[in-house]
Image 1 (tube, helix red, strand yellow):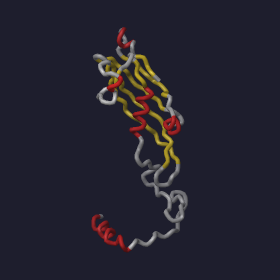
Image 2 (cartoon, one colour):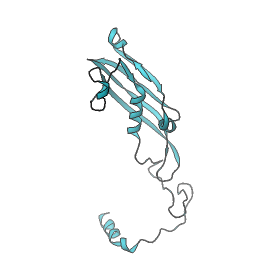
Image 3 (cartoon, one colour):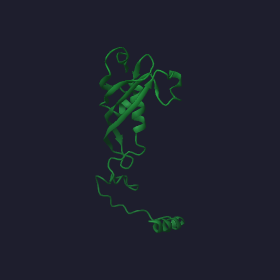
Image 4 (cartoon, helix red, strand yellow):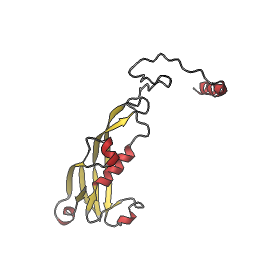
Length: 166
């Protein structure tokens, strides 16, 4: 989804207010079934524009401890500068994004922001008890009567060190 910002360069308009549902593709569309919404302001700067706003959505995640699906609200502050002085082929090496044809590509920007915001190990809650490694029961839902396996005698030295450091 591209937005034309050419009106900022030709008229008395100083700021464009934006409020868009940004279409997502492939894996992002699966993780964000309700989509993502970008709200903000685009203002003209010397030789470009600056976007400031909020990207919000609800991500469908899988907890790494209990393997249950949960919803994670996402709210990302967006600060991005687009310059006409940056060529499209220099995009990867520049500190600002290129402003090609006086259009901003929101799909690429939103995709990058959502990918960077992805947690490495998503948890449904901080106190998630996970699944039992012996019987496989979700310990958040059912009490587990399994006894912890005896520690390997070869690891006793590490266990003592762990206890000393705790």
